[in-house]
Length: 192
Length: 283
Image 1 (tube, each protein chain N blue to C red):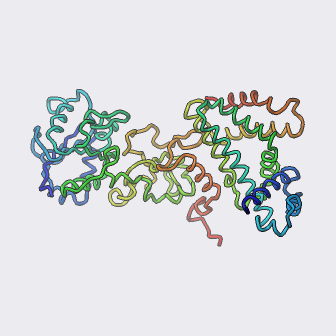
Image 2: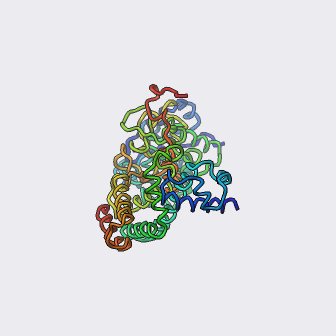
């Protein structure tokens, strides 16, 4: 029961944080949205920072679990790239709070996460799957052997940027229509 | 107990490094008194002849048409092999082909020419072997003790460990603090220096060399010399794919290892990140 309630709080907080930002959103806002007292909220999360960290772990795991399914498919690295991008863009459209939380809260407010989420600590579920994807591609001689962060930055920076443009309403076409071209570009940059 | 087993030590294609290593056994005289070493290529012994033995020790690799005693090496080893009760393949060359050719029952990838008789063979890979490993094995045979072997016919008592076990650099491995350059006393050799200890079966850091040291302790990466694929190329360089080591510690999935490594690296051990002598305890 407590776990279900906790999940509901997290989902509500995720939407509010992603929409309004971390600092503007208060525990009282989340409690109000949940129809709970502020005091009761603290039975579930010791602080707003603790809630933010749990959400980071949650979003990272959610991305990680989905990429893991793609990693386990018996398809080429080129096909995997397209599936990962399709997944990311679909999430950005269908569950925008997940992607927004990552970009608007985690990447923009690193100070919130400095105690307990240092380095890759809270995003390792997601980063590990990307590592496995890259390593597997090199092992199969489909991707070029290079520094991990050079490849990671190219991959995530590019698709994050496209989602950012989409959220700002700059893109003339729906996000899904960019999957093929973006995938092609990433594959060309990473291929062996 | 087997009274003074009759032993023939024959050398194939190799460097006699395992013989030299064996001569460093601190109590070699005591051991030699327990055996009847009828032939050895370096030690004083009788003139070589084909004869029956309790234990045939083969050092060095096999190679087709390699001249030996006015005939050829493989013919001699075949004849000795048939007449021997037990065969010990001493060193990586005799065990797996190593530097010079073919092993007795295994090669790097395929099986060896004596594979059909593998129940008779015990492999003691290493380049060279540790003298204590051979002494242990001979004592076990002399005392008729059961010797448990792994899937590559290596005694489990020696090879179920990895070279990593007992390494004095393990603290650095745990916290993912790498030795960035060759020859440093501090830092782990796994990520940059080519160390193969976490996936190499041996007791090098448990039974020390010359009773004092091991390669990683001295700053040299483990070369993986007890494994079938020895030697790999670029022994002082860790093979990576997108920065991730191509081989990871035994017994753990890549996903689990990468997760754990990422966490350890993120948490950072400040003491190990800098020179030990310059670290000041901040508490």
